[in-house]
Length: 315
Ligand code: MN
Image (cartoon, rainbow, N blue to C red; front, side, top):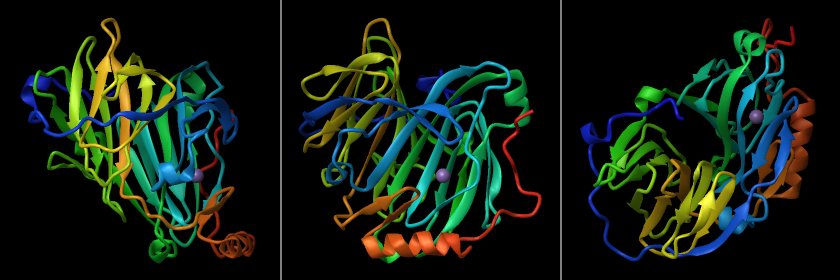
């Protein structure tokens, strides 16, 4: 149950979109893995080529998990260069801090959109209270690539609060759409992006179907956060932990099963179409730029942990 919800009858409504619904190229199932200090994730993009994901690189679903007391985990300090990390917390809380002066709380429907650019160190960790008491945690971390002209920009971040998100309803009130970045049907989300991208979280009520307009020149990916349903013109089976890669067309169809609320992260953008050299925490264009990134990190040229900086709470 996402924190940002609303009565759909009170929201602006999507017009019924025209054009061809996109059919599916693949539906893959995200394998489970561990990230950071050992929190369980689903690797949403596993098995899909970078060319099909472009402009996205990597995505982890964190939870949903109800942490027992003293088990909640995050990441310790680590670097990034050459892309953007987007942390969307559906439920629960992460604290974050970076070596560029950024920091704060990401909680219940908020998004932190961090441009690593030329290099930054950051930490994302559950607050002491969540560690001590345990509790629900559910989030997404998405890596958005930057074109070569923007890879060495100064680091920046956008703190997008839950209340900043643009809320829409489908024509029959069966779905709520939260536009985080980009736009859907002219309704712009708060996030600013370096290349054209749309990122939205859609909640489809049991038995409902929504048809969303989607830019023809964007790729289109739907990831099942929770629930069961069907996607695409062919209404292929879909649900939690599955990634749908759509082919060409004008609209995206999402449908919830009769007995399930379907939570979907919908994302796409204009492909950057440049070579990708990615290793560990860096995403560059060439092998040489990757080696430079590792050297620059080791030499402290991506910044350092601030004095008195945030540390993981381990009791
Ligand atoms: Mn990170």
